[in-house]
Amino acid sequence: MDVLETIPVLLSASSSSSFLDTSTVIALTVFFALLCACIIIGHLLEENRWANESITTLLQGLCCGVVVLLISKFQSSRILVFSEDLFFLYLLPPIIFNAGFQVKKKQFFKNFTTILLFGVVGTVISFCLISLGAYLLFKRIGVTSLDIQDYLAVGAILAATDSVCTLQVLNQDETPLLHSIVFGEEVVNDATSIVLFNAVQSLDVSNIDLLTALKLLGTFLYLFFTSTALGIAAGLISAYIIKTLYFGRHSTDCEVALMMLMAYLSYMLAELLNLSGILTIFFCGIVMSHYTWHNVTESSRVTTKHAFATISFIAETFIFLYVGMDALDIDKWKSSKASPGTSIAVSSTLFALVLVGRAAFVFPIANITNCIKKRPSTKIELRKQFIIWWAGLMRGAVTIALSYNQFANSDKTLTEDSALMITSTIIVVLFSTVVFGSITKPLIEAVLLRNAKPVHSDATDIPSLDDLQILFLENGDPSDQGGSNEPARQKGSLSLLISNPTSTVHYFWRKFDDKFMRPLFGGRGFVPFVPSSQTGAADPQTS
Image (tube, rainbow, N blue to C red):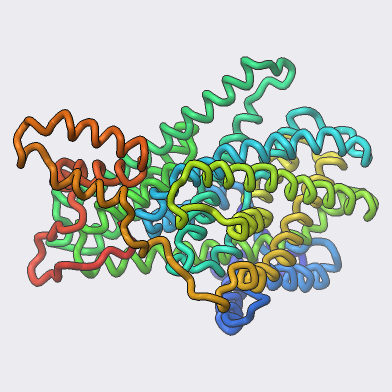
């Protein structure tokens, strides 16, 4: 698939004697200039309460698309032809890896059960409701050529959220619980949506029964656990290699390059094995930040931390810029041939289904978790539930990429209804990102009442009785007090695991990690064998 395509006017430019394609050079020059402009304008609007980087980048893409459309006399609005390979193989991996690498691990795993409920169970509920709603309502609007597989694909496409606008506003130090849930749900949601979409593609729609649904569930669980295991294995292998071979003795560039390449290798292996590359590279990033990052030299730690964040930022900016430009793809709008009323009706129906599908699981799941949790600081208040619901209303590049894959596949003929689904999806993405995204910052400030009272972080809570019991459990190690305390200790461990599972699992994991994992794979406290290297570097994220 071609990656670059210039507008017809630029193609007629005078030929150059250079071995480089002039049209390619022009396209890249314009696009890199736009990326620079996006960064500058985003910085200038940093303090604006109605705008953020993603919205300004999207709007600049729209403006550029209009200019190109006018220059080309409404023939094309494209400077770059965006392919799914470009998105899923080059742009998405660095964003997901950096998310795992920079995540506050202690806070993330502390809320891991809640994150899985929102990201997996919630996404499946949203997928079912959107698919069912589209099946029941689209025929009344006049969309009649879609089959069952298309309706299921619509559910998977619109179940993929994009919480970037909300995460740019939330502060993980001020609202660690809320930030952790929104951030974790977004990553797990993307992976779940893509897995559901791929499962729908391989589904035999002519024979759907209970067994088919169970097979779909089994496939999802298999993909989830194997993808996670592959990411963990890749991270541990990189930690062991760098710890054992001491690349820093000769070149810090080698250890930095190895970290980058092994992270990308894990993603490619997952795609090669038909697993979830998103889950794989995300957990690879978490493991690398816990072990591998501590095994490299001090200069490499600084380099990797900023390099991963920079690459992720550029990829994210690229995606939003293209989404804005691609919204004015004149070929898709011409192929649709739908009246403005039909287009608005389909888009409104899709967005209404998104609203309902989101509310159908956010509030019930949040209240169920509140009934289970005992500490007030870990409960999700109604206003926080509203923010979580709001954060998942926006749609982004994953939605557009999956929509193109389903309805503009090269193996299929682009029908009027298929083109209508693509343009309607684009409208939903633009409306949700620009309108809802611009309201997000003032809305969160109003709902959370930051200025009304001081924010109390659950990360700094006074230890609860359960935490103190775990400390007593630790002090009551039978190796120090004799074997007579073993039955009591086992009973205490079991009761703590039942009453306070998160803290208890974290305690036992910490002991296992210190005793077995870190001596083998390194980690915090490991000192690379490099002359004049500095020690005691702080972890960029809380473990």
